[in-house]
Length: 148
Image 1 (cartoon, rainbow, N blue to C red):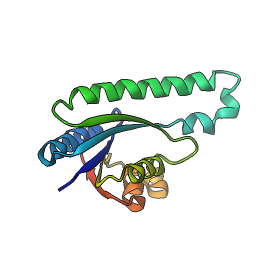
Image 2 (cartoon, rainbow, N blue to C red):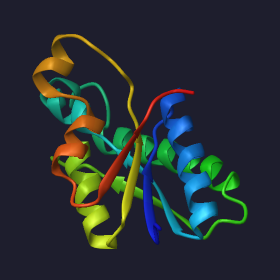
Image 3 (tube, rainbow, N blue to C red):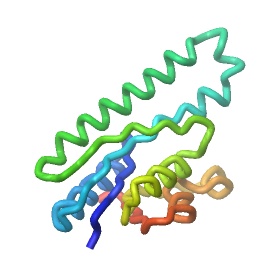
Image 4 (cartoon, rainbow, N blue to C red):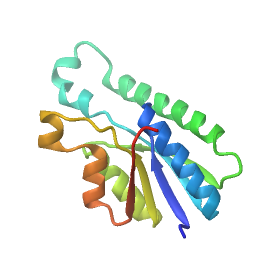
């Protein structure tokens, strides 16, 4: 059914569940799987003026990207038997959901898989989660996976 799938991962339990689900779908559908991680430096940029005297921001961004690559390497190790490719994406002044959506559109994916953290509270009420934002803006179908 699906020919091209993109799964977005971070270092959370729900993300690991999303990866497991995406791997299962890719194996059963014989689909191409893009395993992606978004290096999100927005917190650094938000406080950039205060942090410029304290840390090297470019070095901090490089560390965020390297941590993402390490995460992707671990995910790729689980993708045995799947036509998979790792992608590190950079948010760079965009929402994480927009970054994922744009890459999915560029790759012409049929399905985006992402973990839904199930968080509640004021921040989620005002901003929405990345998964919820992605479900609203993506051109492809979006599968929200809970921890299992």
